[in-house]
Amino acid sequence: MKALIVRMSSIGDVVHTLPALAALRRNGWDVGWLVESLSAPILTKNPALARVHVTPQARAMSLGALGRTVAELRAERYDVALEFQGLWKSAIWARLSGAPRRIGFASAWRREPLSALLVSEGASPTSEAVHVLDKNLALLRGLGIDDVGMREFPLPATPAEAETVRKGLLGLGVGGFVILNPGGGWQSKLWPAERYGTVARALRDRGLDALVTFGPGEEALADRVVRASDGAAIRCFPTTLLEYLELCRETRLVVAADTGPLHLACAVGAPVLGLYGPTDPDRNGPFSADDKIVRRVPLCSPCHKRHCASHAGVMAAITPTEVVRAIDVRLGLTLQEARAV
Image (cartoon, rainbow, N blue to C red; front, side, top):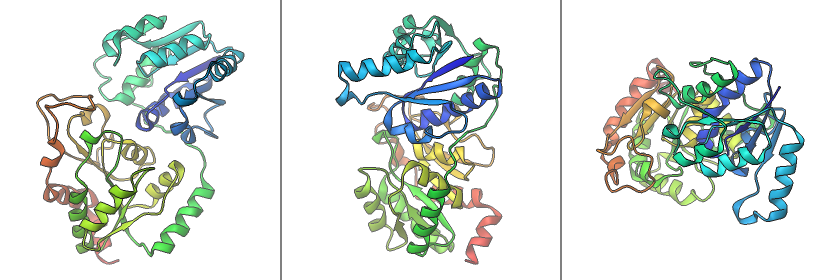
């Protein structure tokens, strides 16, 4: 039995689909995954995957590239395509895969409801599937798999990345540290960089280093945090996605908004503090009972619009004092150890 997962982006959403991959493998399915290039490193050499298909980038989407990807998919003769994304583009790719069964969410559960016309079986998750992890797992019920509640994240082995991170931390002279990640995809979900600088100063008072991480194009944002920290924050060395995973395995805590870096940290079991505004942490927040959330709830919540007048500026209403207090609670006894560093 061969299944194709169609979950093309974004990084956080790909992470949230990994438990479904684990459930498929545990139930004997041979699994491929169709993904965009930005998220592909999480899946390449993933032990739970038989193959990874990378879609052509939009700017390089020629008829030739499209045809080669379609031929590659159809050559695998997938029995079913599992379309997790709920968009026209993902539904079209599921259709082009040639899989005779195309299972996706029913229109009420999709970001682009009419795209449900392109799936052959529409699923409506039941009320217990509140978190997006469980919503994704519920899609597998059409295959006779009921693993709602499972939290397993298959990831590639990363020994080379672990060594790179070890050397990078040594070069920075970092000891016990907290990751501050100010960036992410949606500007309206981000906490102001200067507030992270204030948190970095509080971490210094607690004997902890503040390591500011960043993705491509976010260097200036990281520098704003460092400048606002009065020398308390350290700009991290550039990391790939897999190197960032290893960094999360070494940290005392990750502080970030509802972005891919937060969800990657959760996947490797790092302690996290999530900063939330328009999106609902019950749906896509940290799932460990030990992790903490600081949130301001706008009138439009939950809202998944990148630009919305109702939640514009809501993240700035979260104060550094609240965040530092939540850090103290999350670190618990570990904080006492940090003071001795």
